[in-house]
Length: 136
Image (cartoon, rainbow, N blue to C red; front, side):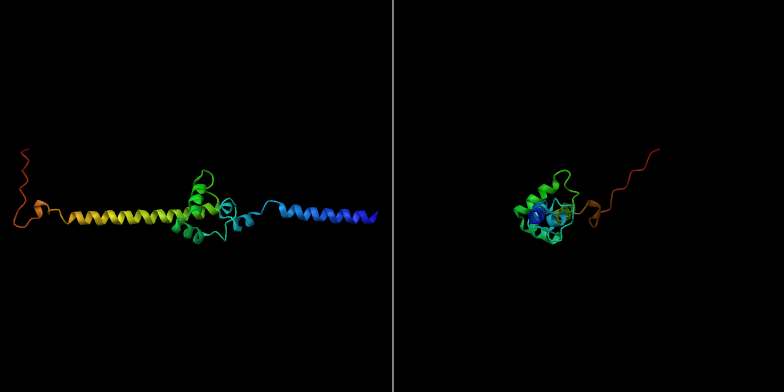
């Protein structure tokens, strides 16, 4: 009777170990696992998929980056810690693009202003016209 009970307990222990190994990954395992898109769903900030990782993906404009942005822009996802990291990288890139566009526009305006004639009151030798007095 003791032998079958010992086998039963051993088998039960193996089943428990197997079930524990096949369960859902922990938040840390999800955040730092092999799937960067799965890491975006984790409530734990990833040490593996950090700002430097997402910045490299953004600079290279990879499909992974496009998928991450699409996922993180989906309502309800942007508050996740790893989507916040994606959002910071995205904001930085968008600010840099806006600054470059503003600089280009300023350069165009400055170049155009070089071809404008000065206002009449600024021409040498001319005096501004007198302001009519108020008859009242």
